[in-house]
Length: 504
Ligand code: AHR
Image 1 (cartoon, rainbow, N blue to C red):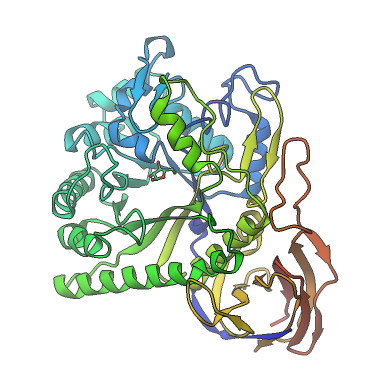
Image 2 (cartoon, rainbow, N blue to C red):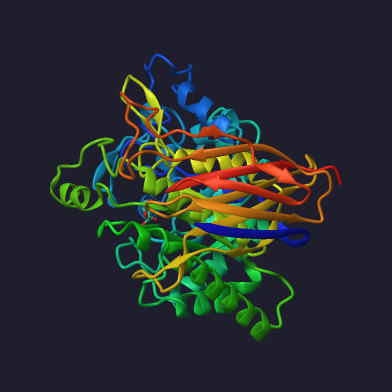
């Protein structure tokens, strides 16, 4: 089957904010304990951080990580997680019905971020708590004036402020499941007053207000309109979340989910514009898509388990074994973020280790990469620069998401510094390769560098601790180039990175 992609050096959408390759770590299951922190593990350093996991995260070049929740944050008492470890109380985590030992807390995460080469994005509790506690936390982390909360941090062994720049004002406050769930008006007012308090301390902080938990919420998109009506001029981003599943085992509908994602982003973009105009505001608000991923392989079973269990510590929870088609879905989601680079400035794959994650660990044992690791890794590595528009002509199919869905999903990134172009392509066709003609206009002396391809003999194939390399990228023949035209063959059910170099 034939397809074509046309792009042009001059058709630039926007610079891509590197932070679209961010991630998320929550006190949930084994994300922290046995994930990134495991004193006694053969690879752990003197702080108990697993260096085998750190090595992979550094290589992934994750620019920002959101912490400590998630639903967990909405009943989190941050004071429990600082100071001498032996004095830290154990607490019930109401979100996941577990015991939280607080042996890893907000200061340890600061140290860990430095070792992981990433920026700390802190989510605050606007569920069970309010402005006073949020303000104390900010001062504990960032103040250096000699006042009490900053001094407490110093007493705890951290003379220098953490200088955290990005703050999420609560989590999924539209969700009835959330501790301290609020109406859009109640939340918008609280978020605005908290933001104003934060800006009195430091007017350059980047503040993120909660949008919808997903685009199927009954309150969406009125939630965004009301929350921004209350807070627009105090915040920089509105956060969106979305998780996907393929319960019906309908690959083609699953892989068309990005159409709904594009629509979700486009709707919220319009709401932002509407509120900006309504308020005659001067500032711009962008989208921070701070939770996204497939999430379904163990979800229903684990939700039943947690209703019945007796408050365990760091149990196995939501450890999805991801397959090839999940990796392709991840490729289409990242393509959508790149195509929307003018409005989506931060995105966090949820999560990073063990819990709905691209990286998995065994207690005392191995670390391995799930299938979804690879499109994330390849986009983080080759998807930095400027997003280019692409005109795509492809055969189509009808499915439950829409009619005439394209078999080919694409985004294009120009890296002017390296004089390179990356074309990311997902071929969703279940039994045919796509032969794509790629026109790269207004680039001279073009050459094909690499064709990196992630595919496999079976769409349900997963990687495991015992067989970690069943679904891994392979190098195919580099793309052939004739002047500005290139021809490539995209294998059935594959994620591809086509890399080119140009001279001017
Ligand atoms: O990432 C898992 C959970 O999904 C988060 O705690 C919550 O914000 C979302 O519902």
